Length: 168
Image (cartoon, rainbow, N blue to C red; front, side, top):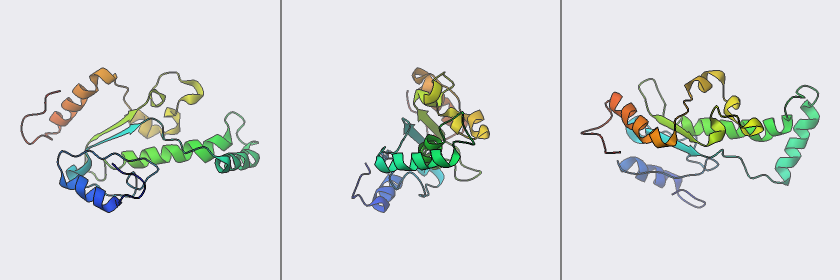
């Protein structure tokens, strides 16, 4: 469990040394991006929720500045929210997902656990459209009840088990 004051390198080392480990961190921490997990070190990443930053007076001031600078160019959307909050949030999410696929030989499961990532009509709360088109094509909506079977099948198809697969 990562948190304030934790030694991130020690946590990363302990995580990669233990085949049965799970690492929990915030996307606004240091282990969600810029850290290399090679080979089998991180075959699955789960992003729970949409990791919006803490909204503060400073964030609101940045949003206001973007609104003043870009409101004449983009009347359909709130440019302040887009540039100050949504784009950095999706960038953080994409960085975390990138811990799985680091090179052409890598494979793994990347889970976005929040309805706002799906094709469901969430109106202004949907964030799926914030992803680049080629990444949106990769997003599959899977019923949560079927996720464990989809993952089991995916990893079996990639011969990822050193023996029989685990029981769901």
